[in-house]
Length: 255
Ligand SMILES: O=C(O)CCC(=O)C(=O)O
Image (cartoon, rainbow, N blue to C red; front, side):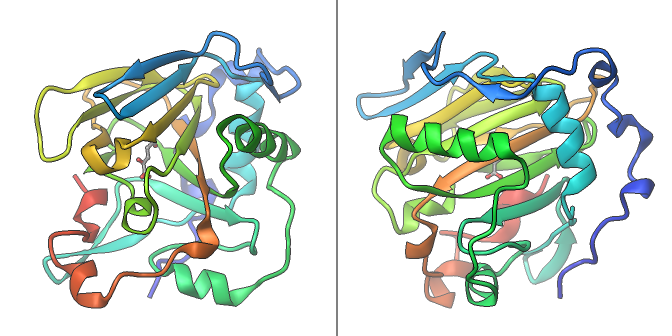
């Protein structure tokens, strides 16, 4: 059973991103990906970083915080249900609603086309679709309220049904460290992502590498990441045995 929607009034007052009050500009994305830097992690895996790809990111942050139905998901780890240390929300071109733990519920629920929560997200999705030649059709939203919120090392589950999926992360709010390391451990690389930065993982990245947003004891403001994923309709949950055995379990979301 999913947790009830979080009452935003009860969410820490720090969620008011102070810069928003002074820096509102009309949101828009850079169609020409100005300033894009590609890093090859190995022969077949790459990441793209585009600083400030989204203009007006502060406005997008505050509107999404206010507008989305935020949930605190629970995930199963070692037969226990534990709350994820962040809030999440979900949109897909196949229907609205929250993904929570069961994508099939979402797919079967509501197959009407719905507009994205903000017009600039439609423009971002179309621009990414054109540039990366992938049909981005779903958007996951993650809200890290402060340094205690995080996501542990993991690779994205697209890798179970797609070869070389492209995952694009648009970051708003306060910058947070985002790390990447070889799957299973090794030397990590770090980017600071926030303020409209775009970060895209492609090639064999989801097969060979894993990523995380670590907790931090440093005082940081809230960060809201917007994850664009493609070919959602092709997704099938793995057989339950595989799904719950070391290959994938909810533990990836904790710590
Ligand atoms: O918030 C981020 O930047 C990354 C989130 C992530 O990796 C995930 O939700 O799978």
